[in-house]
Image (tube, rainbow, N blue to C red; front, side):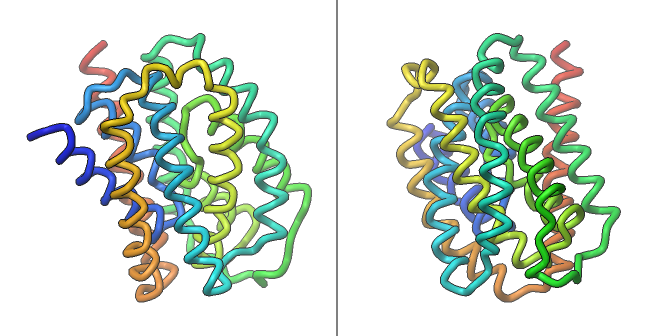
Length: 250
């Protein structure tokens, strides 16, 4: 199968995940770029940020139109993560690829297990706790910069379980966080952009943008609890695959 077909197929799936679940795009994009398209981990994480940033903006607009973005919480959460994202992005270029892969899988596994163990939140969606929001945002920013992910697969669990947003509102708000964190991480990775294959990344991103619109429509038809379970199961499967593959290659 050609690289173009693989890029289009993977992009559509990742856009669907971002549009429907408010995350999961980069946690799926990085493995797809590495295992399907032959990118190195360092280049794959940079390419993932380009793809996820573009797609997240599209999905954010769609969710905002329906009022499913908590701008105050999302802005505070995202702002706290900008500096950690940039610093961690610089550090990521200096660590072994196996460390990046292992850290990626471990963080995804922990986030999936946390979401599977919690019920969907029902707290007042207008309640904002600045302290926890800033702390969670700073931690997410560091993970975003280091692992080259938008952070939605961690932002959604944090917004649901730490800040108590309803799942549907957490999905839309996470897209604001993803966009800001991804841009900050990209700014710190400008030196790794030279190795990007735009003939693959362009179609990948285009398919992801189209998939995001379908994902948004899907999210409007299912319950928040079901969305939370789908998100967690997909994340768990990806985490287990990456950790097993790392052990086999060791």
